[in-house]
Structures are given as structure tokens and as C-alpha cells.
Image 1 (cartoon, helix red, strand yellow):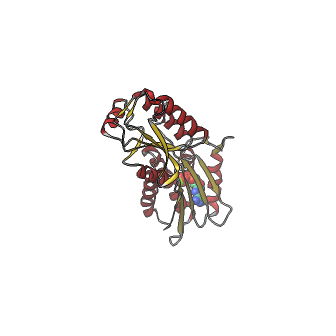
Image 2 (cartoon, rainbow, N blue to C red):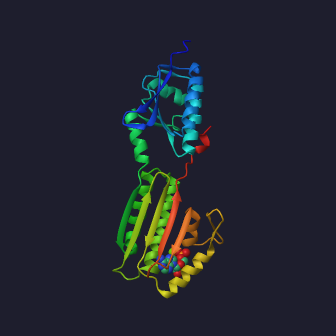
Image 3 (tube, helix red, strand yellow):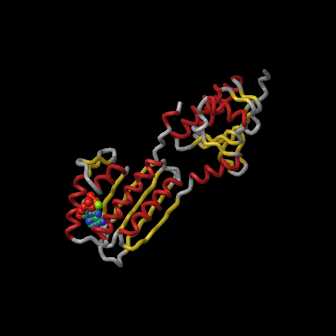
Length: 274
Ligand SMILES: Nc1ncnc2c1ncn2[C@@H]1O[C@H](COP(=O)(O)OP(=O)(O)O)[C@@H](O)[C@H]1O
Ligand SMILES: [Mg+2]
């Protein structure tokens, strides 16, 4: 083995110099392990957790090297980053399948696409909707919002929970809040890579529903960590409180009611992380 010959080069991504690219050589076996571990230690020390492994030239990769990459990927994901594989050759793809980890890694055709993926993940998007206070619109609105959640990487179960939350809150806004048929329900949904933040606002609550709201809020208990627990299981708001990571009910800032919820993205496949 020639000790001066590097098996892995670290270069900045051409279209985004903040993202390091580990460019692997043709054969990556156990001899590359110490070099890889040193590179990873350096990335961790610099808190660089958005990293691309470029495997375009690689025709052989050892399981032990993949194991180290899996470990780093887990660390990166825990730090809200990722290790994305780019340019996976058929030989490397086979190695990933043999180890059963092909679904664990995000894989893109080239470094350029992996950079785009990181840039997309950093996007914060706000969608606002105003719809007439009629139950006819609720199915469209709940599907629209949960589709946005799926599009931004919320898994099926979580997107379904968001659908339920939107359903309950919008039904309430129409049934108990904006009763006038010419009234409008406003929805504001802000989504980033970690969470969805949702506000549903109606234009006016009658006195009797304000009392109902107080009783419903009384059922919802906030723990010291800010998480929500529900005293009694019931319909509507208690269910929303259970499904959301944060629920805030504001009846003071105007004649109507403003419901604010936050739902964090859960990574259900994280058990795979080394
Ligand atoms: N947007 C709202 N405006 C006024 N009152 C509301 C609103 N949302 C909920 N409420 C009050 O809170 C109560 C509890 O709501 P919820 O738990 O969804 O049960 P339900 O809608 O089945 O009555 C409602 O009955 C109503 O009195
Ligand atoms: Mg309800």
C-alpha cells in the first residue's frame, strides 16, 4: 500500500462550496477506513453535517466502509443534516443491496442533484388559503395540506395525522366560528424540512361556542416540556392536541378564533442508524 495515495478526496461541491464532497476512488476497501474515519472526525469537528459521497468512480466498496458511512449518516441526520450518495455505480448498488441498506441512503445520479436536494430541504415555504365558510371545502383543504406535507417528506402516517388535524380544526372554524355563509376561513401553512406550522383562523365565535372552547381547552394539558397530553379522549380538539406537537388556541386577538398547531416530522426508519 502506498501511504501517500489517497483513496478519498474531500472537495467542495462545485455549485455550493459549503457542502463537502467525499470523492471515492475506484477500489474502497479496509485500507480506506483510517482515512475515512479521520475525514469524518474532521467533518464532525467542523459541524459539517450536509455531506455528499461521490461514488462515480467506485467499482468496489467494502461492507466495513459502508458501515462507517451508515454511522456518519446517522450522526448527520441526528444533527438535521444528511449524507447523500451520488453517482452510485451498479457494483456499489449491488453492495448496498447485499447489506440491505439501499433504502437507508438517499441516492442521486450526480453531485449536482444531491446539492439541489440539500438546497430544497433548506427551503421554507408558506402557503395561504382563504376559503368560504362551508363544509363542502373541507375535504379539498385537508387533502391539499396533507399533500404538501407528503411532498415535503412527511411519511404516510404523519401526513394522515395532519389531514385529521386540518379536518377537525376547519370543521370547528366553520361549525362554531364563522357561521355566516359569506364569512371566510383563513389557513396559513408554513413548512420547512423539520416541521409544519399551521394557523387556522375564523372570523367570529358566538358566546356559547366561546364557553365550549374554554371547556375543550380545559381538557388539554400541557406538560413542562411543552408537549401535549390529553386528560380524556374525545372528539375534535382533544384529538388535535394528541396528534399535534403543539396546540395553541387564541380567542383574544379579534372577534374570531385562531388555532395554531405545530407538527414535527418524525423519521420512522431511524432505527436503522448505527
Ligand atoms: N373555531 C371555534 N370557534 C368557536 N368555538 C369553537 C371553535 N372550535 C371549537 N370551539 C368550541 O369548542 C368545542 C369543542 O370542540 P371539539 O372538541 O372539536 O368538539 P365538537 O366540535 O365535536 O363540539 C366546540 O363544541 C365549540 O363550542
Ligand atoms: Mg369539532
